[in-house]
Amino acid sequence: MELFKRTIFGGLYVALVLGALLLGSSALYLSVFMLLAFVGVCEYEPLVGINRTRPLRTILDGMAAAYLFFAVYSFANSHEYQMLGGAIFTPYLFYLGYTMVRSIYSDREFMPNEIAKMFFGQIYVGGGLAAASLLTDTMGLFAPERLLFMAFVGIWVNDTGAFIVGSSVGKHRLFPSVSPKKSWEGFVGGFVATVLVTIAIASYWFDDIFRLWQSALIGAVISVAATWGDLFESMLKRNAGVKDSGKIIPGHGGVLDRIDSVLFVLPALLILSLVLHL
Image (cartoon, rainbow, N blue to C red; front, side):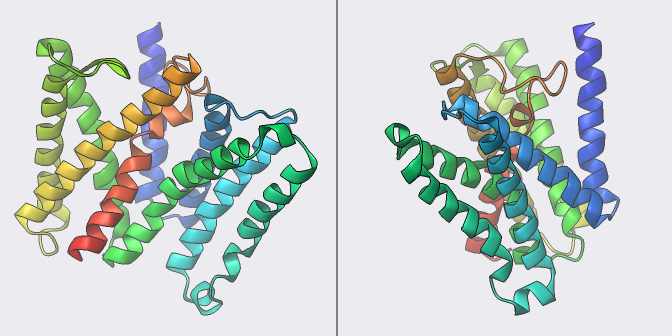
């Protein structure tokens, strides 16, 4: 029964993400990724022990992360918003300022740690997802959704390859203090699978844009960053003493459990594109 639930709801999650990336609907894309940002922050804050006596504050923090994604997407894809400068970010900056001022009048004993954790959550979740819009704008591709498709498929292939190889021949622990089940053999299996799949996708969709070594490098960055992202969230959960970040996806845990690798992969690809001018 557990396997059935994992398969059904895992399939629904994949279908939702792929639909947002490939159907060409800006409304669907924004809705899906803003929802991921909102729920991701709402799951992150309890993990790091942010003291919220009023649940509304966590909801507002989640809404702020969702708005950050919307603002970055709009600025990167709309000439009208670019002509206005950074005006679209004003409500977000106002909320951050309001949060700092509010801390003066309430829960002073928990500050500034609470503020630092909250701000980091905005960067980690909201900023990590928003890198998707900056990535596609920086790389200037004709079909940017295909690049994001390649990133997500690379992450899923990395997870699958690491699990298959690790569960079959894994003996040497990769990071036992954070994730005891991960092995170096599994990492290598996921790495090789990701590089090969990335090359295959790039040769089909980006043959006139990426050279072979660039496609292989993108695959390598996806694999390494995805592993780091997984380990980072595992560290948060281990410190919090929980197995999953939430229960919103039956059989899979929380949204943060599903996007932990994404939050590292998208910024890593953005940095790669800026450094190499891909």
